[in-house]
Image 1 (cartoon, rainbow, N blue to C red):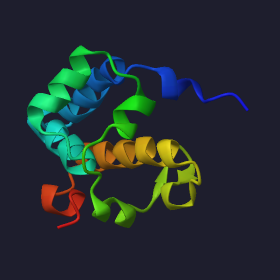
Image 2 (cartoon, rainbow, N blue to C red; image 1 turned 90 degrees about the vertical axis):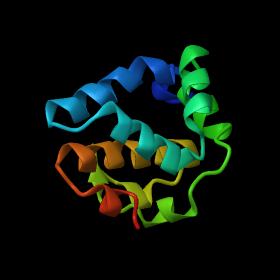
Image 3 (cartoon, rainbow, N blue to C red; image 1 turned 60 degrees about the horizontal axis):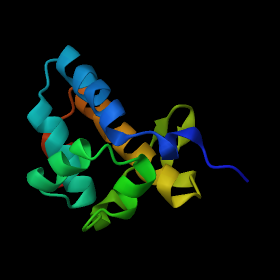
Image 4 (cartoon, rainbow, N blue to C red; image 1 turned 60 degrees about the vertical axis):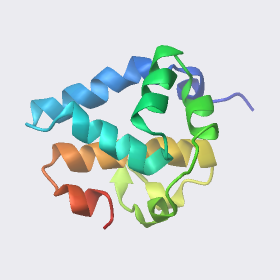
Length: 116
């Protein structure tokens, strides 16, 4: 079975789209970064290093220092698929991030996005 194309796509190539989506709705790059750090455990320096290295999505999530255990509480539909029903771990991580960025763009409070 061939891998989905997103796995080999560089995270840095999609990152500006996350920021644009958030900023279009009055949110900030700092909030996008906070979500990514919460989800993956990267600190800001590590996140910036991954972006600079043009790390692909599969490696980005595989090397995540400390994936947040609360990410399993992320529920809902993204791209017509329930995130909690996605079996493939890397695709689920990617969709978790998509869902969190969607919530940010929809104006949800940061405490709720970060499942606090």
